[in-house]
Length: 443
Image 1 (tube, rainbow, N blue to C red):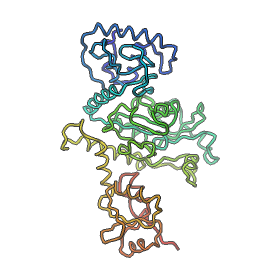
Image 2: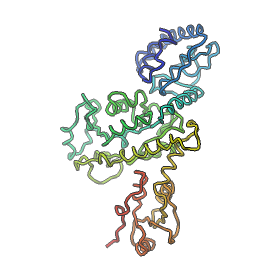
Image 3: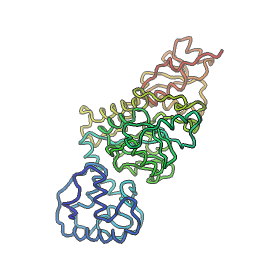
Image 4: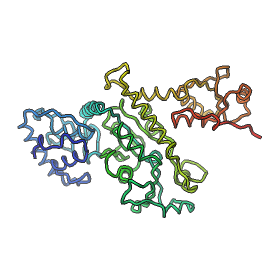
């Protein structure tokens, strides 16, 4: 097999990349054992000899994050002075030399044992960015639990949820179902309403990743339910086993420029370094165990035999936001004509600032621990927050209609709303009807 001519250069499928590496390195699967290292060394030595015979190769351009990695074995440079762009185990992926140290970042979700050095990661991101922008696409990182689906252990189903055991969909054709019993995992999973339409439309605008705090077996099982044909994610399924920081998610393991990445997640503190990329999702609770986990003392949608609205739920609303951000990013009339220099985080901030634009808010007796975050949230959505009332004020936000400022609002015919009005606007990226959040006088 020729390293240059036989490699799947022009394929965008990560499975082709993995198959190519399997053939070249003798790795039978991502779960191949360390005993293969000697065989891999021999194969890589063969690659190194072949490379010395190559004086030039046709320059190729990758079409996805995984596809671009193929260039590591197709570069036209001489390997006598190898820069060691990455490694499998302890062997350089280009020259086969045994390497010491653990520099760079591991991308085990693409292929077990794959580690890329910082300079190579930067090169791949730059190249992939140009390729992606030419196709008018950005990156979208998707959380699983409470964002795209809700799972529970079978043992945790309440007595009022037992009817679900007879209502699960077939695992033979998961593309038509939304409720699945996974016996081998002792688990039941409910996909969020609208998720299949969401993924189908989002893939036209984004190269998508799954990124979950669940373990790898769980992540892959959920990916099969969401993407049975492998058309949305391919190998781009990241679990907690792939992260570089405990209890944190980071874009260091995503082969995409941060300036072109959007994140959908229900947990803000999981992305402490990337809050500007984050679209915070309203949590999806279907099972009673999920409701209890987050302190809701109420019946679950499953117990009530109810569910989130398909056409007006969280995913449907956020899809509109994604379309708006995507359209704005690729707007031909922007001052910066070079797409590479544009930053989706600035676009996201601009779109967010329009949600409560024109609203002038005063808070009344809000618990001190909650006030800073509510005020920041409102200001990020374009509202002006004041300490005292004046004629410009449009909304008083309170939990008690009996406070002085609340009474002023009623007298002056201003809106008197609960703090959830701000939170709802933040989740749905649109100003909510005030009448749904009115504070009533205590009797």
